[in-house]
Length: 272
Image 1: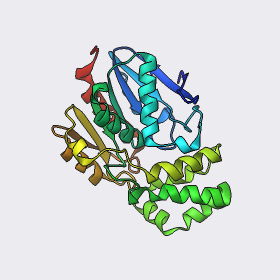
Image 2: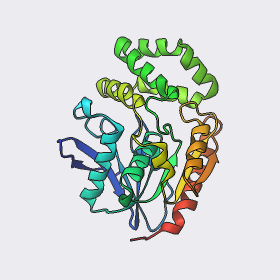
Image 3: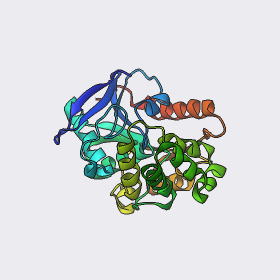
Image 4: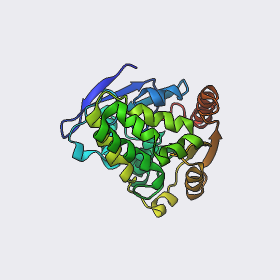
């Protein structure tokens, strides 16, 4: 990725990618990931401009003040990036955490959203959903025991064994957090973000009046397909697409993900 940087109002240096030309699509990553995650599943479409911000504590971006780490702050940073780039309106979307950020923008700043993509959403309207408690487990064990011993304690926990049985891909992600080089930022992110929500109500979600794609897959403990179905029911006229889980086939997951995005974005090419 050809990353660039901008500085937020509070002095945090954030990395971003801005590639292609045409209709801008803000396309955000999940918790603990970097810009490679959303890039992998994004199709190459003439007339579409992809913009991805690496949120605080992710990828090449700085962490800044850990007390400011929040979904609300990430959304504010994204709007700051759009302002920096002179983008008034964009298709807003993302994976997991990125979907929560996009939903917040669409609900609270509807003038900035052309359309909405919620891929593998992990939040609806509540703070600290139970299916995200495993992230807080990882943060606690990483802080108490470090990398190697922390993984061992995680693998012996009942919650992790339940997740591994249902979604080996989720389990692999949890192990992977212990290999992140910046321990402090990992603990800050995993202890704070999963306790939060996107800061929108069901009524606000229900009143969203823009073209929306919801993407889900089975065998995904931390991104339940039932949650994606609930969001799709709340947003009138939205399209729900269920794709193959990475647990079954990573290749099929990527191919089907790209196809779903291509079908949704193709009619929006080169919009002013």
